[in-house]
Image 1 (cartoon, rainbow, N blue to C red):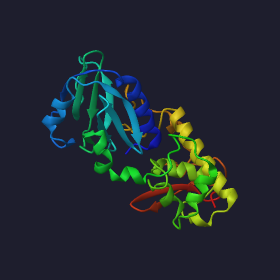
Image 2 (image 1 turned 45 degrees about the horizontal axis):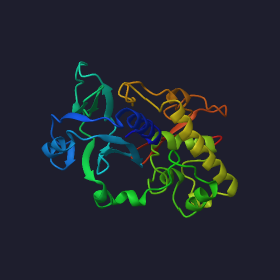
Image 3 (image 1 turned 135 degrees about the vertical axis):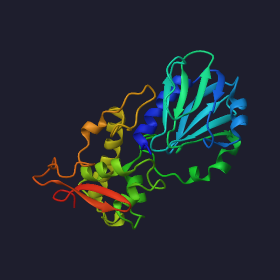
Image 4 (image 1 turned 180 degrees about the horizontal axis):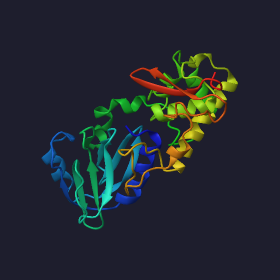
Amino acid sequence: MPELPEIELLRRDLDRDVGGRKVKAVDVPGAGLVSHPTKKAFATALVGTKLTGARRRGTTILVGVDGTHEIVLTLGDQTRLRRQAAKEPTIKGTAMVISFTQGPQLRLIDPKRQGSVELVAVEELAERHPEFANLGLDPADEPISWTTFGEALLRRDERLKVVLTDPTFLVGIGPVYSDEILFHAGLRYDRIASGLNTQEIRRLYRAVVETVHDAIKYGGTSIGPDGWVGLDGSPGSYGEHLTVYKRDGQMSPRSRGPIVKTRYGSGYTYYCEQTQV
């Protein structure tokens, strides 16, 4: 699924685009997208309401509805939200269309049916999503001190890549940004977190903050023809700044050796053998 920078960019765009707009109609043509309540009840409940902006819990986006409910959006790898005029052709895989009394529609495109949408009363959110209470640090949401980061890190007796991609430690970091963070920190993916010294913790902390904020600055990472796009359909340009992810065989930016690709879990990890220790 999209990682933290992409989800945060989408949240910001949604907050600007739908906040204060009144819902005219809701169309959910297929089955399986709306997980609560029923599809018909979801559409009926939204018509006539005013959306009050967007916030985020980890990689889940929540859009306020009249101050009493929230639309809970969970995106899959190829789930896209698009702002489009009613006259624009419907893209294959469009799973939901929200029309407003003024302005363009909000469309959810989900060709592989990976996304999920709910309408939840504010007071029921914690009950329906108890995982929100266990979310870790969020470098895109508010400043984090390196001491807080370090204290949490040293409690983990796991490999660094496992820790970085654990949402109870750090939200929204997946295969792309974990590899980039570890390269910038000069640390191998299989180092044990609790064994890092103070200097290494500082480097890792700085790499987390700078990588996430740079990725947001450049509009996120879009890889391949089905890569992530923003609300207006534009891809991100941070892919041009990737140093190791899917760069295997290319020369490392910091050494004379090539970037290495090695099996990691069900996928791969990318790193520089000479400078990541």
